[in-house]
Image (tube, rainbow, N blue to C red; front, top):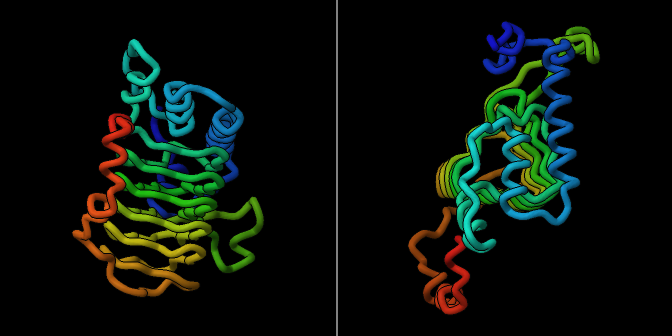
Length: 230
């Protein structure tokens, strides 16, 4: 189906109208998919992945069922891990890399594309707001006026602490850490630690520490055989 000009304007970050039949229907689809995902209860990893793909509109077929439950779970080790509940506007404008983890309570306003790079971790109650409104109240005009947005890019290997809020148009650079409660109003440089409201650089991210080896944690994981699923 061809993309309407109104929807195309939304994805480009231009003024558009959110309360048209087309976009209302798309948000309703996502809301219902999120409700199924959030209320699924105790289900297999395979079922959880299938429900998630429905939320984001990913029609990629699942891998054939493996012989054992452990082997079957291993097939989806690189798929995103998303803890319910999660709430989004469209779902189809969210792009997740391999092995992304999103803890419970996330709110994602994906008016424009929001991309999250591989191995990035989001703690509880993170909010990503790619949508915004005109400041002029006469233009804003409740649900009858136009809205707009800006793309959010979170690069690979980032960590966003609990209750972090990210504003529209932000790029969070690779390997950075955003401290709990931060409000990210400006781009974050790669491999830096930021915190506060608004978020400011605290220090550089340490690298090459090999702490997982020197602490003995990796040896325990390998001894228990749990590493096969990761």
